[in-house]
Amino acid sequence: MTNILLQKFKRDLILKGYSQQTQKTYFRNLEYFLNYISRNPLEVEKEHIKDYLYHIIGEKNLSESSLRQARGAIKYFFSQTLQKPMEVENIPCYKKSKRIPSVLTVDEVFHIIHCAANMKHKTMLMLAYSSGLRVSEISKLKVNDIKRKSMRLTVHQGKGRQDRYTILSEICLKQLEEYWQRYRPQEWLFYGRKGANISIRSIQRAFTNAKRKACITKEGGIHTLRHSFATHMLEGGGGIFQLQKFLGHKNLKTTLVYAHITEENIIARSPLDIYADKYRESRTLYK
Image 1 (cartoon, rainbow, N blue to C red):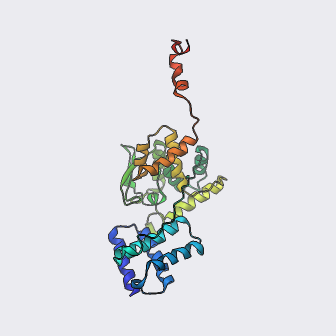
Image 2 (image 1 turned 45 degrees about the vertical axis):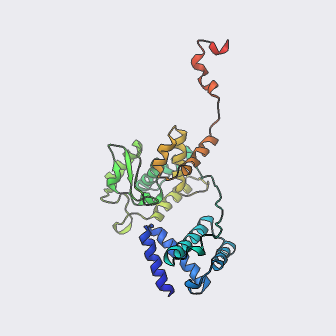
Image 3 (image 1 turned 180 degrees about the vertical axis):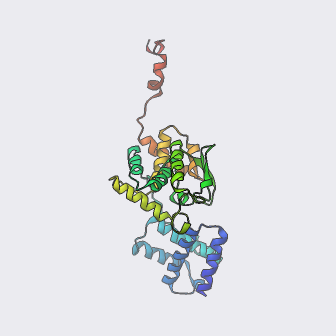
């Protein structure tokens, strides 16, 4: 019975259109849950689910995101596969804490890119920062995604399975041209083993090694390059709505986090002080 329901759950995840990574995560979480309760899923009640969530909070010490994934997998299983939404819809949800993204300084970003092990790694890290890409998006880039005339980069099936355009740096384009001359990629922009696209772990490892070589101890993985792109773009005068499109955020609130970071780095000045110099010659304001 359990194996049959697990296969139906896998089917429902595919029908929903979840990414392969989300499918694996949800399926694994559901397996943990069913093994823990050790009973027929059709006999599970809300208290069993609450006991399990309490168990993984207290004993497994999971991160906040892992806990939400576990709850989401259980909820989808009961609401879609078993058609019993009443069992999970009212379970209290772990309150999401608000964290400010880790951001690198401009000097730190350039130093990390400079310390990349080779041209391939340097190009990947430069793209991550200059276009605000997620590591999964770098892995799936194809040669044809580079739009030279419009200076845009096509991102296919990003988070939420959405296609979008993001900005392409002129300096990064020159780097890409040099990279192409040396490696001659045909389909995937960055190849891994056996002709497949490069793995996410390989890109993460390239960043970690470059960061270590640069002697930067600030917390955060390769995603900090995306955070840094967003923050530095706003500091350079970029618009918040334009940034939202480049990052592929559905909700503007997600993008506004970077506006708050930027505000903390800016010393506020009154518009009187900023614009008064234009009127000094008339001395109107000083009479």
